[in-house]
Image (cartoon, rainbow, N blue to C red; front, side):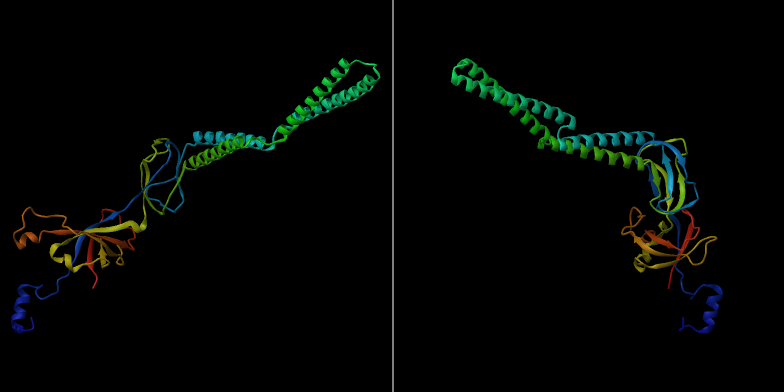
Length: 316
């Protein structure tokens, strides 16, 4: 342009007002959001729906609650099973009951009395036998009675020893395993009960409520969708001729109807292949129809809504 005469420049500008002005690159696109879909881990009837479409929520805020009647009953049953297993384990660890041991002690004391009496009787019979006052048959009878008394004492002593011992190792291992299984069931019941209250994993705006209070939600089926503030992105397409001039991380100024001026976006994704390719490419005119999909994360998006048209201009 500087090599042209001034009069020619004036004429050209009069005919083509934009001749000689720098080309301003801009791309048209629209806003898109990455939604977070919240579902219940258990199926059931929704008894309390706190989420409201369009309202802002904070992380860990309660969204909805599922009827917990079955989960509460299962928790109580699991607690009872733990109590039974704990009592059985303690019983095996301490041996027989005190009342049972007391009965064995009484039987042992009675057997010892009989033992002493039989011992005394045999000694007297043996003395009389030396003088010929009693027969040898009587001595043999008293000897047998003493042996029987000794056997009963030994029997009750053995019973007492066994009663005071804890259970066998195999029985205790089985009881401990039963107790551990009951504890695991209790933890599972508590977890299932906690799952009936569903909270927001992330803050944002409630976009859609798919179930109303009183309806039955299926396990894993989305009940509420949330749009986090940092999940808004601009989706636009870059012509083939300008693909090499943009790079990841590049900053764009964003404009839209009724939007504040400070909205920006940085390029986070750029397609490696064209989104639209004509069937046959032979000419430069056909190549110009190629476009590449691009995504940029919006910053300071304010009240920009998904689907809203946007215009993006590369920042100098």
